[in-house]
Image (tube, rainbow, N blue to C red; front, side):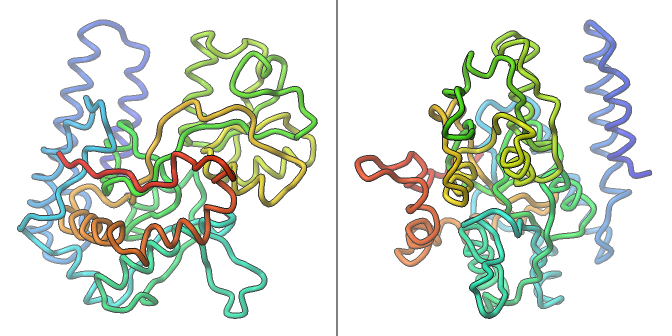
Length: 346
């Protein structure tokens, strides 16, 4: 069992404790495993140098536990130091990226695409990252990763990064490193057009709501259900591995509504004319590229790519206009997502 898994189990065991003693124990464990992880998790190339780099990065990123603006916790594009992670990708000659292959207009297989290639907003970004690191935008190996395994895939080294509509938040910063934000969205409700559901409100009373495992939607539903902000009669027990599974359950009548990112919900509404967005966004969230903690050089490299991609007229804006404008922008009003988020580094 890895040190990270042991740490998580110990933290879970401490949840029932109360008072200052529990907090002290948790902090002590966090420090202990921050020191142990560089010794137990190595990519195999120059273990000593990488372990030192991971230790320094984790020391700095430990502050994420108290972060208030998680989207502003990434590293500046500038900065020196080891280039071991980027060099390893160049030596391999391929960038391995975890993506979605079922999210319409984000990362999906279009049956009309003769080449059978993945396409979408996230896929465009992956190609740009590959071009900047390897000089070839097609030097990518895509791996379909379900919503519930995004963090695990990064931590286990199955992929170099995950580009999959992944919200940056403080809890996730304890497990992975994020790039600067590349997209702004928020949680929203999706339901049949004929439904009495009007949004994230009292109209969800007595309704079955679906969300994806490990998603920010599920976290918010559980929090609000426990606090009373959501009606007690709302059934939030339907949890699926992949967010798109919620749409299927909605179509089959197994649930009454779906809570997910508004950007994804808009694309799903475009797929199925019988469903629609209900109410507005009720959270403010940012997507980022997730990478292994300690891979400072790769994080900085991705942030350089994002910096240039957003400035390039043929980059971020062109991709948004092609893939997302048709589903997200109204005739008389642009979505809050229509403008790339500003990057602020720690």
